[in-house]
Image (cartoon, rainbow, N blue to C red; front, side, top):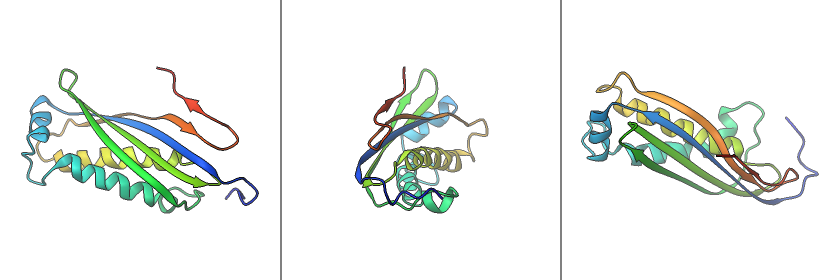
Length: 145
């Protein structure tokens, strides 16, 4: 594990996204909240937040961090049958929260998969990526569109 004790405590933020592709009927049922396991987006939001808080337990050599904020939002694209999952994670610490943002969207995507797999076996989790980070020595990063 990297020793960060000499690094300065700064405000840090990271954002990530993932995409989930489902069948048209599945997307309609998710939006109508018509699935046996309940509200897919709220369950996935909670799963993503909990996963972000436990990243240090899931990814070897990650530091435990005091997160000050975790937000997860969902956007649907009916034409492409896709759900975009976006996370925003913040802290004031000695190391960044990129892994927390990535774990949040990944776990939210897997929760969508789990909640919908009984009605749709063709679900695909796609394009998990960091889109933004700020704070620390390396400064700000913004993924090019």
